[in-house]
Amino acid sequence: MSAEPCTIELTSLAQRIAEVPGVEVRVDEPLAPYTSFGVGGPADILTLPGSPEGLAEIMLVAGNEGLTPLILGNGTNLIVRDGGVRGIVVLTARGLGRIEMDGAEATIESGATLAALCCRCAHGGLQGIEFAAGIPGTLGGALIMNAGANGGEIGQVVCWVEVIGYDGRVRRHDAAELDFGYRRSALRDTPGAIIRARLSFSQGDPDQVYGALCEAMAVRCAKQPVAMPSAGSIFKRPEGDYAGRLLEEAGAKGMNVGGAMVSPKHANFVVNCGGATARDVLDLIEAARRLVEDKFGVALEPEVCVVGEDAK
Image 1 (cartoon, helix red, strand yellow):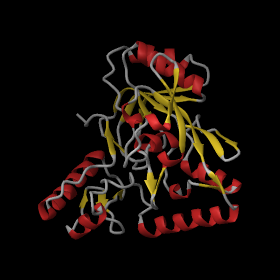
Image 2: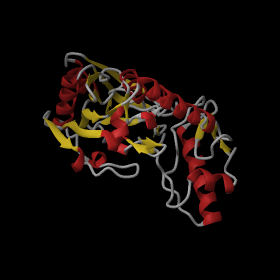
Image 3: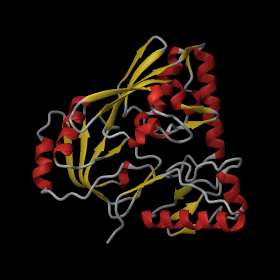
């Protein structure tokens, strides 16, 4: 979801949000450092809640002003345009990362990283999250897009998800309501911000779970450019094929625009080689997409989310 243009006095709005206990506010804050790609212009108001209660207050303020905040976790699977984001941006990764284990289940706040969750499950010998090893995002983003790899998806282990609406109220959605599918869920169109979710795993042997996590991570490191700034897979998998294969066969590997390049390691990744702008990245993505459509007649669908405004 993207923020709407901010038509009210920014200083006054920022001051009101800053009065909420446990909420940090930064005005005209560059968003590039908060994204895995390292590109993007500033947020009018960046807010960093330290608790679900703080998040609820931000959502209430936004709702009263008719604003739709942009919710950020680790800023993965995301490209922020060079002009930045108007209105309010909420960063959950810094203050909403609590994980509470309860037997073979866990209640996890939306800003918790999948890496932290994998570690906690390995320690307890809990199976079901191994597919997420190496996925760099937070739980909130993973739930919205039903993140997955190696045959597993986050929707497979969800019991329920709680969302704070613009009235400050919390609503719980059972997994059956969320319509989890390939790289999508009903949460994308659910008004509000995810607070937490309950996930259910199966009991296993800690050594075996840890070994499976290490194996999944090794495969990811071998195939993907994990050492370079990127937004993960750029295109969704087309039916009956793979975006990476089509891009490689079309000759996209190594293409570049400015500081952005299609990874020589995996053609479905665009990496920031240094100094890339969002415009570089988006132009390169479009050029690669056209190559595949011209050669194979396949219209690749973006997996990465694009938010914000172009630079003026």
